[in-house]
Amino acid sequence: MASAENAEKRDIETRADCERLVRAFYGKALDDPLIGFIFVDVARLNLDEHVPRITSFWETVLLGARSYGGGAFGPHVHLHAKVRLARAHFDRWLQLWFGTVDELFAGERANLAKVHALRVAQAFHARLQGFPSPGDGAATAGGLVVTQHGR
Ligand code: HEM
Ligand code: HEM
Image (cartoon, rainbow, N blue to C red; front, side, top):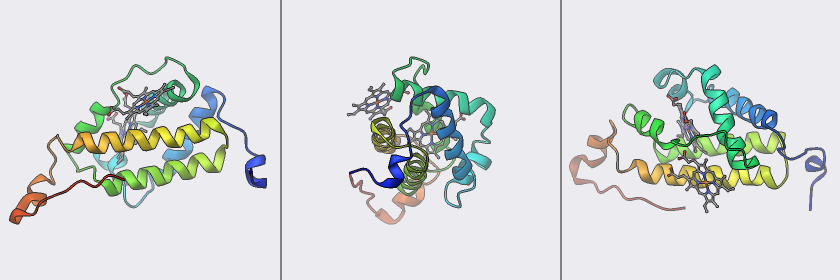
């Protein structure tokens, strides 16, 4: 049953909607105490370049556009080589993304935006375990075994 709040919101319908979502997300993510530094200090993200690309990603996933060329994983390998992208970072990323989607939109595509982000986050986190990161030495020091827990 749709809540009164949801009834006022519409679904994601256009590229402009995707861009609005992406910009609102970065409005939170860049200031976030846990993951903000990764965008600001580590990646030194240029939003003017990044927003169109990530908007195309979501336009491709949600609206069936072919505006995103692929290769989303690569930049995260590069980041992970500088600062470990841990489960807690992905969890926060998802928390901010889900919150932003829910604030602005409601509907099937809004749901898909959350579901697909969850899938990609899980896949990225799992795949990153095969790539080097500064945290590697600490994680294995003293014979500790690092295990992966699925959701
Ligand atoms: C309309 C349907 C879908 C579209 C247009 C779509 C689009 C995309 C795009 C553009 C990427 C990024 C790929 C890259 O950068 O190389 C991606 C990644 C991914 N998608 Fe989807 N997707 C769809 C449905 C699904 C479904 C149904 C699943 C799972 C059941 C799924 C799971 C994933 C996963 C796990 C990744 C990350 C792969 C990786 O590790 O790089 N997607 N998708
Ligand atoms: C810990 C979580 C994450 C962090 C810190 C993070 C950070 C970043 C940063 C800094 C970039 C820009 C890299 C560059 O251009 O130098 C980037 C690119 C990107 N991210 Fe993430 N990301 C995270 C999770 C995700 C998830 C879950 C998704 C998908 C749902 C995603 C999708 C993308 C896409 C599509 C790009 C653009 C890649 C391209 O240039 O084609 N990211 N990310």
